[in-house]
Length: 230
Image 1 (spheres, helix red, strand yellow):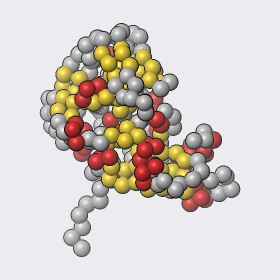
Image 2 (cartoon, rainbow, N blue to C red):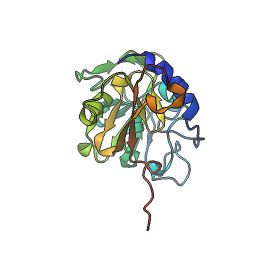
Image 3 (cartoon, rainbow, N blue to C red):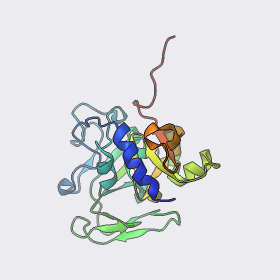
Image 4 (tube, rainbow, N blue to C red):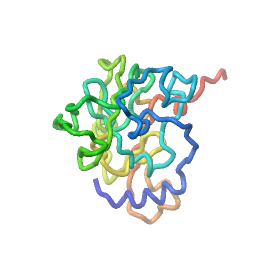
């Protein structure tokens, strides 16, 4: 995939990005406050008080820059690497582990299903996956992990838009994926809709080389329209 369209996407993003405020708290928490805690739904200090249905809480970072700059590696059951929780139904999380006992193995870090052994504290000795440096991990234990169908962004593109030609970029919900596309994994069962938007549809991009935006919407309340009685 060509990199030039990303520059054009910046112009596009500046004009249409939704910068909504995000409540305090995160699945990731603070790397400095990890301390090996195990957190459970309803008792998790990383979530606002009283919120147990976490799909109703917007956990996306405020900006595309913040979203793409996160340095915490998200793992699922068995330490399967998915990079970010954006493509996972966090309502199915039953435990959150902020620190793993050394040494530990991170599995499925690329399309070849390679593994990485971490032998030192990432906060002092960051590790690298697919060219990106991480200084902490968060393992999400899902109660329905056996039903999860992980797919790469390229895999979703090939499945749903196999005839799409030319350069393209990805968005997941409201965030652009600016780099490290290969590391993201999404649960296919958690995908609500996928759309392709052409740069030719935007007046501000007229006259520039065309590209496509592949939009992936997950099953979060913000993406699912309410039931209408008429």
